[in-house]
Image (cartoon, rainbow, N blue to C red; front, side, top):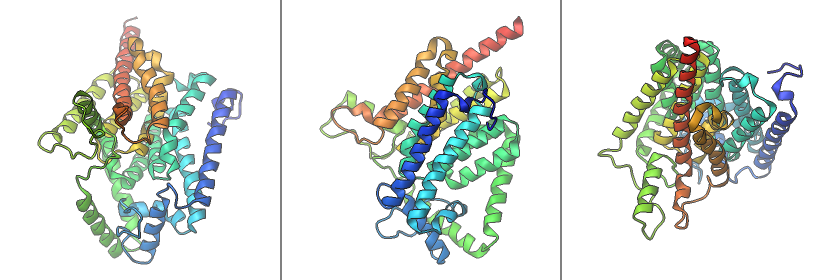
Length: 406
């Protein structure tokens, strides 16, 4: 992607405009975190965790009114370069790096993974990058770790598409050790490509051991503290969650409207709901395996990773609005390649355009009695994206069969 020839898509006029918007956004975020380091940002949580670990204390204890630090012990090494700095400088660098790695991952997908992307026009590349920015912006603006998480996942998928499996597995291992709740994506890929899954396990073990070498006793103690923290918050349901359960609660509210807003804090129905994610996990795996049989390896990797992301955002634990950053490049792909799904192209158009608009404009708004579906806008976008992915896979499979016959 660093080729300076005129054919380089990043040097085309419209694409350069969108890349400039990415840079402006990164600068704005860095300025915001410098001037208002404690306002609408979670970076102080990461900063406090690093400071506690350096002092020999538990980073999982509450500090003042800050939210709890929820990430596994190896993740402290990712926060360390920013947490040792003064909070204003560390926050500014953290924000800029989060935007940078998200963009880097999206560009690597563009260059190495997304089917046909190397032949996209200037307009299509620009739209892809714009949708990615719109969807990712809210997840980046509050300085959560989703930018780093998304960047690692996108890089892992791009390297897997290049058959660089060790590099891919280490990138995915870093993402998994940052946020284990996104387990569904690597699990789906590992079930589909077991040899890659073995490399992923080896990469996880290597990172855990390497990060424990400087202080093995403290590392073991931190793992104990993290497990204790996980037990205390297991099964927690917040009104900010946006997933398939949100969609169900909103639908019930529309059918049988009550006085209050959709009851988004209603706990999961434990007697039947846990079976639903499992059933859909097998459905996603089976559908992806079936559709990918007639696809090129590069296209198959993208299809499986996108299906895994849809499953995670619909059924994964603790899915909030910023987590939808992980769907950013897949929504951009659906929009610019909508026609490739044949008669189901409308699902790609709706998922890409509607998802980007709703995620950017309405994602941070609370549920309200005037327009209850607002709460379900994000999971609806994932349902539409899932439908487009299946339609796209079917259409590409048909095209491959016809080419083989001819």
